[in-house]
Length: 130
Image 1 (cartoon, rainbow, N blue to C red):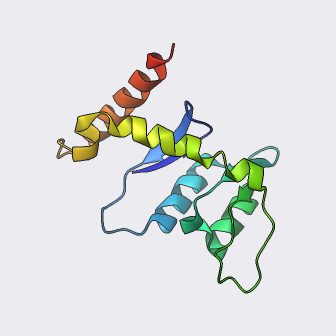
Image 2 (cartoon, rainbow, N blue to C red):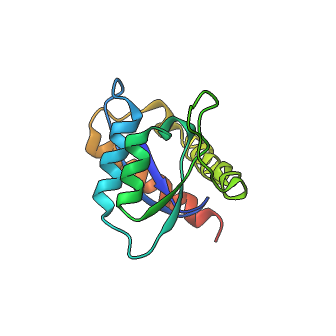
């Protein structure tokens, strides 16, 4: 499952992918589905998405990629360290979703049922703090 979230409580979009698929191409598809942003918006990414293709796509769609370069990168770039430290909020969202046993063990065999339960879990998580 690939997820784009604004913060620890706000999910923007998610998509399923085959288990053997690499994350970066699937995440690029998810970003393309959102369309261009009217103004630059910071997008905090994991180091796994620090490739040139993903970074270029985020810039083309109006995002400002906030991702540290890998330590062996020949031409490292600058990024907002303070904003990148907030990435743990998204990790906490994933942790709360894993609290739904049906999600992390994937009891549903059909993708459509699994997507329905992801929506249910996201709504349940959002209502939990109200």
